[in-house]
Image (cartoon, rainbow, N blue to C red; front, side, top):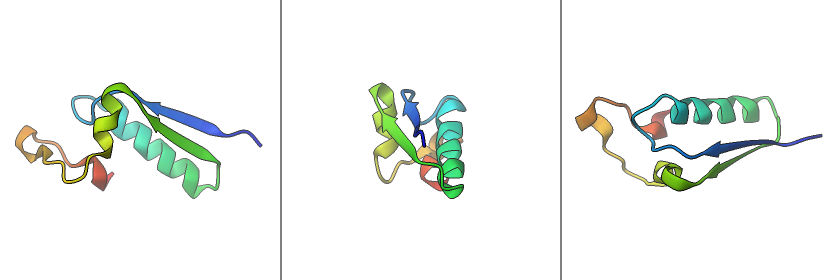
Length: 64
């Protein structure tokens, strides 16, 4: 069986791509599809804990 690789390159806020990538990865793993998520470039900021995006009107990506 093949694996699915999702590459996160964008910052956690400012576009829908990052959140949609996380949601897609979670959906695929819930269907028992082997999925990997790799964060590169600005995507590494998604891994930071205790993000405070309330000031810019976004929900935390940790709630996705």
